[in-house]
Image (tube, rainbow, N blue to C red; front, side):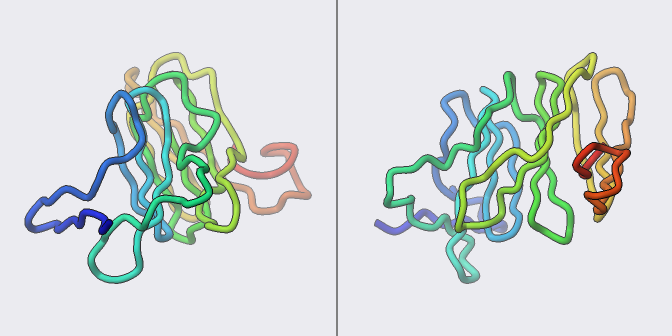
Length: 161
């Protein structure tokens, strides 16, 4: 069966993605469509090569497109740094996750997680070395990415702090 296609001009349906409660946020990065669910789920779908912007065929090995662990509440924002390789997600549960999710040869995995925000998050933005988040309390928080994993102190094993 052929995957449904999407046209930005026509607004045609791209296809159904996994989320029992509905999709809350989307991101296209590194040849994948990422869909954040209102239930806290995050799914990764391979895009078919070519200009048609179609979802690739479902996995034939029976594995899920869902990325684990899910957020405890809706995924409200997604972003990816321009150099690729990572995806960042923010949930209404007050958590941010950094995912290694842009490699078709292995399952997505959460690399880092930040919790303890006093209110739910609203949006994310990132560039090569900075992640910015905001929340319903109007606070804007900057996390700096440290590429030197040996150095610390921005995290024992490097990464966003």
